[in-house]
Image (cartoon, rainbow, N blue to C red; front, side, top):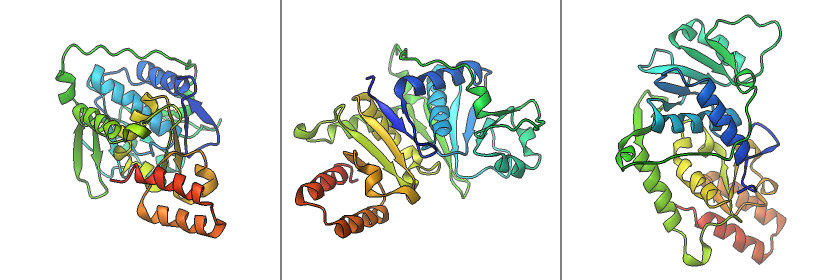
Length: 277
């Protein structure tokens, strides 16, 4: 749908699916086309770079050996098969302290300054995105069900435990999410899913993908809201809210203080109840 939009935590603009798809295709074709194995993602998928790199890597996980590997923190030791490391800032880059040599590519999601002198394997987000074009095209023609057993992504926790997820996990998650809605409230292009607080962070983000993709596939929109920005005014167009209990309590306290009408309270209750797990 031309009306599908995604709003991220690192900016005020909403991006269309054409823009996000074009960025992901550009990154996959121009940057991640060198037989890389794992893309270590240490930036939040609730940010534009984190989301786009995730999508590009997920597409690569079907087409070739590429895999997104979500990292709760920047590795202090070399992790097997991680060829690309994606980090959030030049401050993070300085903290690598020489370990950038472990990777074939380090991608920093912050603009460069003119006086920077960098190794050949270090790039900035703005540089690698240069020249991308919007794209509506996404081609996928599965010949059988073998793709279901392919690894979709890895996650490594702050205590260094690594978990893998298959393509089949994503497909079944999307199907289960869609089927969980009552016939009187099926997903549609009128829906906006808001992923709030730390549920969009890199270490927990794996849990929102099936919900987000299901909503986008139905023509809906997606919004990420950081924990510090979570206020009623930030979720006024939300029909589906994915948040943690403590964040929900903060919103309920704000509702009570503003003396919402019964209808407004009912709409809010529906938005959260339909996503309860």
